[in-house]
Image (cartoon, rainbow, N blue to C red):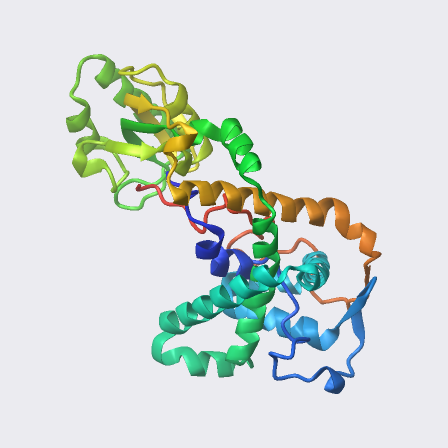
Length: 351
């Protein structure tokens, strides 16, 4: 049930930036193979101070498809393409306003991200880029633009803002030891369960535990959480902010040493017992935890700009219509919302 919230933006960059939201203009930089003077394609977006051409947008789209092929289908939907293009405008504009310190750190991190991609693809790296009609410089420019804007936002976060955000979310930093039995919407063999069947079995588990059954033995018999099943359902000394919302709230509020009613999450139904719970004061936060809070604030600022301030650039979109109907899908992952430092790259039932 982990949401991997403690991962920083830079760790999530490839999956989040590629999975759509904060895109950037990869082709208009001197780092790119394409020279602006050679680009005679029409403008698909204009704004105060600049334009994005069709060729530039196509370059950005190819990068996105390479890094997140499961999202490629949505790039054929007009409404989605328009949203991406507006975000390109924001990144193009904001990167030009970034400080030198932000640009320097972004350059370093962009190098790290490209090396990570290269390592991940291994011997197929060059052939994969060739098939996608991209170069390493194209990928680096993509990463650089996103990271420049993010680092600029990050450097603007103050210590007072970090402390204030901690006070609002300090329950996420509580450390707890608990046990749970997960009755999943799929059984151990991968067979689908209906919601009603899962709830019925979860209630049976609760009844056994209320009747005095050993929790560890019950978890080993019934739980579908492979990460904790063999340890008797125990999750020991974990920060609660790493869990999906429903599980986290239950772990934060359940009376200690009390068997819960079934708690529903996206994974199924959990029967829980919290054994201990310790709040973490601000001065005991790790550097990584403080960076997580800073990342959350930076991404909130970026999202706020997109929602409230982008319109001040007087953005005008002139994209050609695609053949895909708006909102049409062909299965697979739904489009993601704008990424934040809190957003998971993936979720998994096992902690």
